[in-house]
Amino acid sequence: MGWPNLSTAVAVVAMISALAAALFAVVRLRARQGIATATQRATYEVLHTAGLAAEPLRAGLTPAGAAKAVRHLRTLVGSAGLALADRDRLLAIDGRGGHHGEQLLAAAANTITTRRSTVLGESELRCDRVDCPVRGAVIAPLTGPDGLACAALVAIVDDQPAPGLVQAALETAHWAGAQLALAELDSSRERLARAEVRALRAQISPHFIYNALTAIGSFVRTDPERARELILEFAEFTRYSFRAHGEFTTLAEELRSIDRYLTIERARFGDRLQVKLQIAPEVLPVSLPFLCLQPLVENAVRHGLSRKPGVGMISIEARDAGAECHITVEDDGVGMDPAALAAGIADDPADDSGQHVGLSNVDERLRSVFGDQFGLVVETDLGSGTKVSMRIPKFHRHVRAST
Image (cartoon, rainbow, N blue to C red; front, top):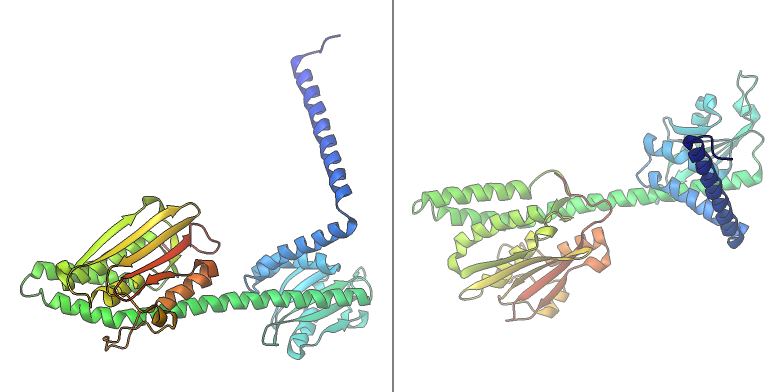
């Protein structure tokens, strides 16, 4: 007997395919469960849930982050409800117990002040609701690296808190406090990075401003149009160097600022300063720490070529290297003593300004942002010039140039 119509045939085929796919999925699931032991599955579930809770906590204790974390923290503790609170408010709550907010907040504030966990029984959590299932709560402090409590974890239960649940709440609170401490560490690193940029600006500006204004002044009478162009270049350079936002920039922006810097320096050195650029277009959008390339070029001019008689060459190369961008700044100047460089005393003794834009600042910033494997590599010797190389990942989490 044939099919009644084509649409019915299609429906039957689709149903058979769906059943086959479901059967295949069940077989795969059973096979997977047969490989992993119950202990391994339990370990995976705990670590996976902890990871889901860690991400919002690592952004700092905010209402939005707490709202994302409490559901996973409640799973870890195994309580009927769970809340995160600071001294002034319940930041977020998941599950039961929301109508006990004032009582829980008061207990949380006391726990934060005393830094001691608290167990509440049914007598401390009375309410007018006859159907209220809440019978107890465990409040544990979340302490930072300084030992001070910044928040509290509140586990709400339907019965008197059992010893196992109390211990689970305490351990979870300790772990959550460690995540908040790491968030504070990340914030401290960001503040340190901003301070390093400010210090770097302070090192660059006095020396360069003096030389730039001197060079511009020499053209005011002899070549007013040239002086005007240099003033505009100087203004754009300082605008970029002292911008108020963003710890990262693009390679294109950094090279544009370097071009302005070299334009002013060529006005001072004349034909003695030669520049060679080899830049792969595909790496121009790569993000890198703000003012990490310009100091290398300034070092090449100040410490490599300024004391060299005759013509000096600075070569800047940026090339595509798969997942990375490789950048080099090389000069054929007087070079540096490798031992002095390693000791961190590569300052120019003839520089009476006392200001030296050291390579160590850039090296530390690169390592801080990308990891120790991305520090500077310096090749130099007295009379042999200097070559400074850096590697920049094309993509890195949390690294994005400001617009």
